[in-house]
Length: 284
Image (tube, rainbow, N blue to C red; front, top):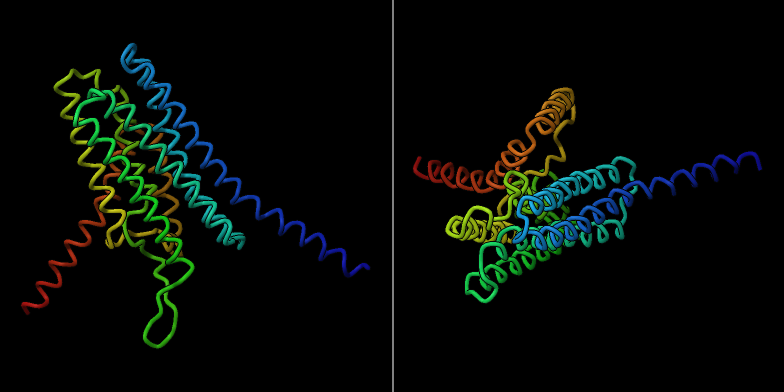
């Protein structure tokens, strides 16, 4: 009996560890839920009190940013505590559809598309179509990621290989993060800038939404940062994270927009650089 008691305690602790990554995923869902509610509230005030509406839009953008943090932590905690499960992967993907698919759509529609264009206009209808296509591309991206995670690519020798350093296609969290960073940078609804400027900015956002959708379903490589901080470079990574964290605290509207833009664009730049390098190698 004395030998069995430690096993029971260990089993109970192990079961408790499975709750930790699930709690982060639940926090992710909560942020998406609040972002949708704040976007709706901002839309109600956009035409009567744009300044008050900007506060709600900013809250929604910050909630999406916090959701990215929780989404990053749940996977790392699951791997660290060795509590990753199949249901956890599916639960995380369903959470991402809400927080990084529906929530940013509600935000951009309320802040930009609906604020700039008349509901019966062609531009409004096209903007809604692009938002829908963004959601479809994001859902497809998540489905492809789950399939690649459960069925790794098999080499000719028959050995499975998983590329943990890179993602195939732009992940949906940074795509949503870029849209949220733009709203956080300029939370005033677009109708507050005047009719002409509002339509121009809304058109630019529509182009961005289309580009993000294409990048998500593309085969461009985006670094996952999963191997960053391993070995001797761990100290430098901690210092870099601390520095970025302080800059976010002091200048969040600028830093978040720069970081989101750099991540979204680095996959395209990486692809162009690879093409140029291969072209140069072929000439030689």
